Length: 61
Image (cartoon, rainbow, N blue to C red; front, side, top):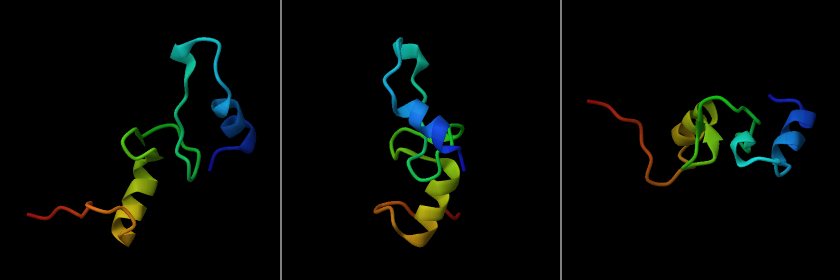
């Protein structure tokens, strides 16, 4: 879980566009971020296993 100050700093519009830090909206993690869903890989996996993401299912072969 990221500190509240780092999450607040990431929400501000940066001076340069290359400084944008995309963070997970659930936990605030910046690494392993998936743009399509707006969350990190860990939260994505938890939500997918709980069935909260429509159209996503665990692969098995």
